[in-house]
Image (cartoon, rainbow, N blue to C red):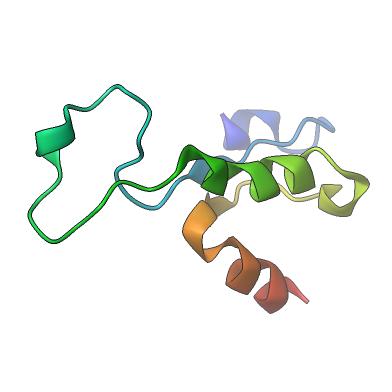
Length: 76
């Protein structure tokens, strides 16, 4: 999709939570012992940023929500 829309002004990015997320789509016992589900709120900051003017021109990026702050710092 990103390749098809390159140069059109429409940006396409992939946003992943970064692990199993408590969305109700996975059974509670699906996470291996010692791991936990992520809070779905982890997606909020990158979603808000992607919808902001600060993300103008960001295209064809793979963003992992649990690593968003580091990813954003490294972009500068």
